[in-house]
Image (cartoon, rainbow, N blue to C red):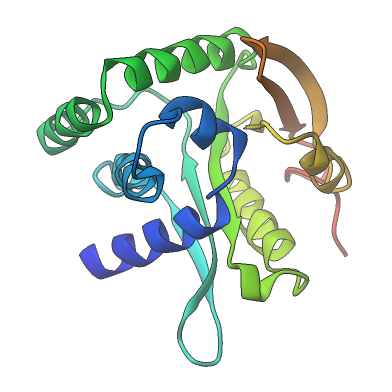
Length: 205
């Protein structure tokens, strides 16, 4: 598991290197790349340590080319190991970064859909694998996984890059909320409700 977690963290650090959320939370402090590893490492640990779904696609050489992390519906306690990691991470990243992340979490909470839903945390594709359709395939697999939960009413996600909106709406997501965080960051909430066929997202043949 540790090997897989490290590979997922490395891939997501590449995919999200200049992502608005990471730049916003980490700010202008030195060693951005090292701080990013700590931040995304905390995010991925939140899934591994709770046993939440993490899906990936590997190339012919075995290298990880894309990954998606998810939170199932429901409330989940914070494992002791995760609490310790979070404390150590924010101690390293600093109080300002922790406060900026808390502000962003408040914005996400304000646009979170009601009802029982699964959440897509992060979806990333290695730079060398762009254009191969991995993102769409992983998202479809994630939606199929959520559809196996009969109590789930929707799958939601947020994006902080307007260029991503078309990718998700073409796959059956609907824009459900928009919020500006400070002056430099915007976040959009998208929701894929369960359709008549029983699944989520765009109906596939």
